Structures are given as C-alpha cells and as structure tokens.
Length: 344
Image 1: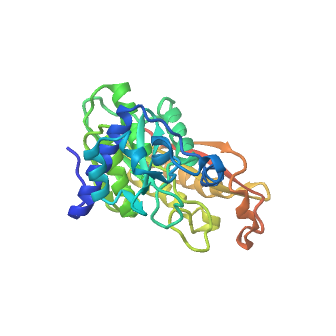
Image 2 (image 1 turned 45 degrees about the vertical axis):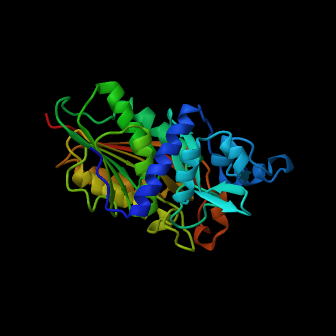
Image 3 (image 1 turned 90 degrees about the vertical axis):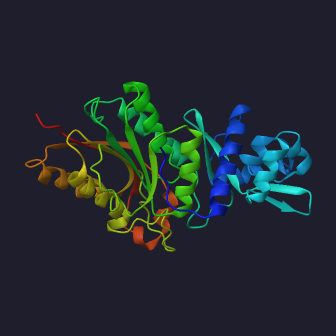
C-alpha cells in the first residue's frame, strides 16, 4: 500500500481532485508534451493562442479559458471539486485558468506546476525530464542494470524525485521485465510540493508499494537500495534556487555526494543511474575528475564499475556569462551508471 507523509485535509482534498482530473484526462485521450518554458511562453504569446479552446490549452499550454469551454469537456462534479481544491483559478466570474499542468510521459500523465514556474518549489516536467527518462530506460535494458534474486524484495529510490517521473518509469519497466515483484519505491525530495505531485503521479500510474518521503539525499533511507535514480541540480545559481543550484566545485557538489552515498549504501548488485551537468575546463571534465578516483578507491572492498556517457556536449550556454564560469569552456550533460558488483 502507498505510504505518504502526514498532510492536511486541504492537501488531501487537492491530491484527490488532481488524481480524479488526471484519470478523466486519460479517459479522454489527452496528450501533451511539455516544451521548455521559453517555447511555451513564445507559443502562448501568439495572437491566435490568447484563449483556451480545449483541454490541452487549459491543462497543457496553461491558457485562460471560460467556464463554458470547461463545462463542455469535464463533468460538473469534477469541476466543482477542482474549484473547491483551488486547482482552478477564477477571475471576473467567467475566466478560468488551471494552477496545474499535465504532461504526457511514458504512457501516463504527470501533474506539475503551472506557468510561470519560477518559484523555488515549482516542479516542471519539461525536456530535462524526458531526457532523464530516456537515459533511465536505456540503462535498465543494458548490462549495468541492477541484479537481484527474483523472489527478494528490493528498494528503488528516486532521489530528488520532482514529479516522480523516473521512479514511476523504472518501477513500471521492472514490472514488465520481471513480472510482479514486491518492489518498494521511495520517492525522495526535500520539496513538499514535489512530494505532493509525486503522490498524484504515482497514483495516476497505478504504482503500488510507493512511499513519498522528505529527505536530504539518502539521509532518511534506512534500507539499502538496489537501484537509485538521480538528476541533481548542477548549476551555479545566484539566487541559490534548490532546483538549480549545485554548490561544490562549479556546481558538481550534489552529484559527487550522491556517488559517495551510493558507493556506501547500495546493495551488492545495485546500481546508481544519474544524469548530471559536467563543467569542462580547458578540456578537463571536472565531474569525471572527481568521480573516477572514488570508484577506484572502493574497488578493493566493494568492486564497482563506472559507465560514463556524454549525452549532450553543450547545455545551458547562458550560464557561461556568469563570472563564476569564467574559466569554463562549456557545460556538458552526462549520464553516470555506477554498478556495485554482486558477491560471487
């Protein structure tokens, strides 16, 4: 059964309303892939896109519509529940705008924050989520995937889960590949809003045995995990937004901490799959330079392998204008798969 952190009556009401809305959208074959905030802002700014005419306009593009438009497409009882839960923002007595978006992802829908999505606790399912999901899906089918006894329960941790996308995808893939296994899925984040969205999305995906838990990395995870998924912040952000600011050497601090914790905590046969930003300084990959020695030091006691892939050679180019990046050539997006070998 799902386990969630304690919550208020209002939070429970909102979560229930969002799950009901997500299921209704799926029944109506709703489909919308969230682009970048820049693209969404540009497209919404076109004259022909001023008003919402359908469900994707309302709950995807996040445009302002009318109650008449909404009433023609959603049951009256559901609209009432969404208004009571504060999901719908009403202005002028007639105009309506959703405070939540829904994006398509891996045969399910994910609820996430409405535009403009600039607040520190906002959760966005955008291109970065899709890239991370694609990386996890490929690695789960590869040689470094975690290995365990088919009859033994294991714990899957989505670290800094955000919308819960990666954990949901991995859990569903495991079920498809290995049949019904007593997998425990921990959706971990420090952001309470992320945990609420993760609960909504796990329920929409019919995920069983999941738990939403507030924690700083693996601090509140007592059981050794078999699979850890992570897509940590890796940029220097002057406002120190937790969704972006990495800290450490050129923003690599969280990624290095995750590698350290996983090398200590993973079960034999376990795997860390992580996407991270790697600063390249005079041709040297700063993240790889930090991670490789850690893998080598653990090999005597806990043999481990590192699969390191460059997924995109140049991301977040605008960051290079900051003084902190004065010596950085470029920022690369990389995929790290750390596999702790099973005991013979």
